[in-house]
Image 1 (cartoon, helix red, strand yellow):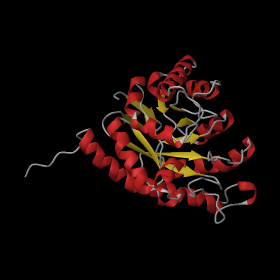
Image 2: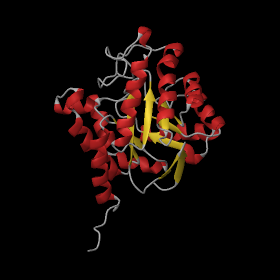
Image 3: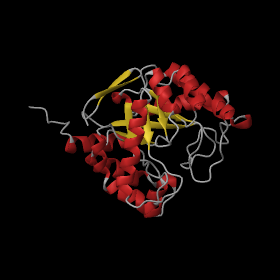
Image 4: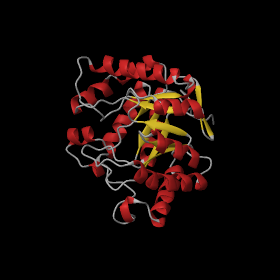
Amino acid sequence: MSGRTRIGPAVFDWGTRTFVMGILNVTPDSFSGDGLLGPAGAATAGVPSLGGVAAAVAQARAMVADGADLLDIGGESTRPGHAPVDEDEELRRVIPVVRAVREALPATPLTIDTTKPVIATAALDAGADAINDIWGVGPDPALSRLAGDREVPIILMHNRAEPRYTDLVSEVLGDLRRAVDRALAAGVSESNILVDPGIGFGKTADQNLELLRRLHELRALSRPILLGTSRKSTLGKVLDMPPSERLEATLATTALGIAAGVDIVRVHDVAANVRAARMADAIVRGTWHEAEA
């Protein structure tokens, strides 16, 4: 993928290297166990306390120091069986964190991970630079209209309510192609549209593995590709490991994803994935050359 996209304070030149997105979960029930509203930092009704906001800022700073190019902030878990979060609670969770992280890290692009236009609007007002829509292939173009109106990038992720497919990859491609067309019709510029195959969303473990095997076929969409496999349940099923022990599996998907042509990897463990990405880029993209003596 070539071309460029401005995400807030930074310009991303696609194809030059792989970019790393750090995950900030402002939730009490993240599948990966990294939610910033766990018992130590939680306040009443799931609202981040001052300590919780400070913890989010500290985590954000650490991720950027480890090499994260951008950060994704979300306030509602997407794990299977998660408790739905209403708009008021999600606003209370994420907006103080978005505002504080923006103030602390003005040069770092921030994305808001939500399915709700009210949350996305408030997050953009608080300093977020782009929208990460995990139902980007859904029929409601409200988030795409918002992205078009605000002239910000949007990540359109593949998802389905049930993992039922006749031809997995062709259907994922078709769903994403239609989502891109809806976003364009809603006023989003082509350079502001990214796609995500949605590993772990509306797919069985076998289907996730097939999609990862055939990830290179997403290049047909001619859009930057974001890959989110970090600590996902498919990795745990293959290795029979809990989320806290899935780093090596995540690194394998990062390297193989880069070989397939992905542009961004969305991860919990930034430092290790940055190193894996740099090594993979040196091989796949030829980004490293030995200095002459």
